[in-house]
Image (cartoon, rainbow, N blue to C red; front, top):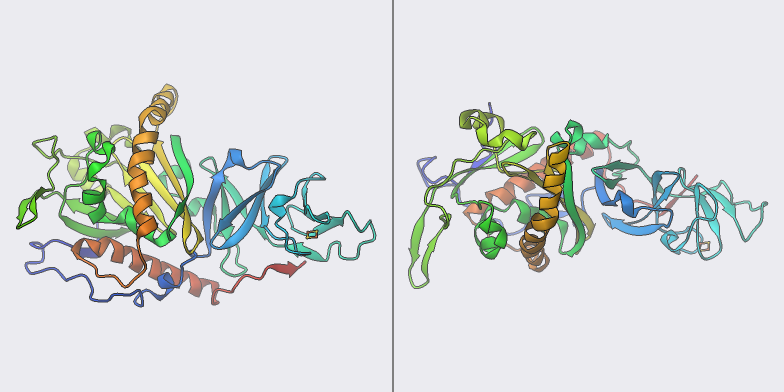
Amino acid sequence: TGERPLASTGRARAGRAPAEAPGRQDWTSWPHYDGAAEGFRGYWYPATWSSHVTDKPRPFTICGERITLIRDAGTAYALHDRCPHRGVPLSEGDQQFPGTVSCPYHGWTFDLPTGRLAAVITDGPGCRLVGKVAVRTYAVEERLGMVWVYIPLADEEPHPVDSQLPEELVDNPFVMGGRIEPRGGNWRFACENGFDEGHAKYLHRTALWRLFKPMPTWNITRIVPRDRWIYRVQDEVHWEADFPGVGRWSNKRWWKKRPPRETFNIGNTGKADTVDPTIEAQEFPGFASLSMPGVLRIAYPKFIHYEFYVPVDADHHRYVGVMVNFTEGWETLRFYAKYLGAIRWLFHGQFSAQDAWMVDVTDAPPEKLYRPDISLTAWRNLSEEEYGGKLAAVGAKPQAPTDEKKA
Ligand code: FES
């Protein structure tokens, strides 16, 4: 396929000891990543379910920006959640006139598409500020049953939201179930946790999900770049070991004698079991993949699980976990029933709560990395490179957003 591993944990593969995890203990090698505590700007982020955006404005914080979302005549709008008059959140206000939102304090009323001050209810028709003051607006799209907001880097035009979605979600029919919830911890720790090879072996050892779905049992990993994703590709090697003084530990699947050959058919998972493994190896390189600005894809044989980590502020993120089955017709009901009856509780519940816990308690560097952390460093490299390119394309350093701008 012409892919080259970015890195490998394989001891035997290189014929020598693998490159040790870098000795650095901080994130100075990844300055953009290091500086992105509140997220990478210049991307679309899912804010909430479409059905939760109504004519009653609601507040959301994305990449440190306070935003109010409101729906008018079927269209969702996003405005900076701060009235330019005295700084009251517009999300506390309501809709007095179609196509607008009014601040609850003195009735400054803003046009939703442009953010321009359309009327000042308490100053009559002659108010001189009308049309001259504006609250910032954000580009909004609706995909996957969610409202997506573009957080600009400078004043650039947003790229199409579809170009940022996992490719298979753009054109294929599918049924989907999911959870969106606020979580503690920095979004980067959430990203790193999702793609972290080591944690699946250990942190999730008590997850009930493991009774139903195979969990990783490899110990040789390669990171393979492909398009805008990095894939974690594992060769399954089972081991059992005595840790002197500690006890015995094995990475075997404990309920199966023989490691099953699994195939992961990204794009249309329905026929995954019958895919020729050699084709699979070429076409679908990995079980776990990650792309900017923090989208995890876990390709199970019959469905794909995605996690979108949405930066809120330096200490909080929003977890958006969706399970997608590429099917139509009656089959969608079967999957959705399975989702509500089991997956939602087992996977998006107990299993995912273990991740939430760990992300919340992970501490900022200094850190001491070990061999399986190539998944983390590969992700940091990817984000560093892509964001560097984005900055260059915009031709400017990221500007600190100003609260309001003149219309
Ligand atoms: Fe919004 Fe006065 S603070 S109208």
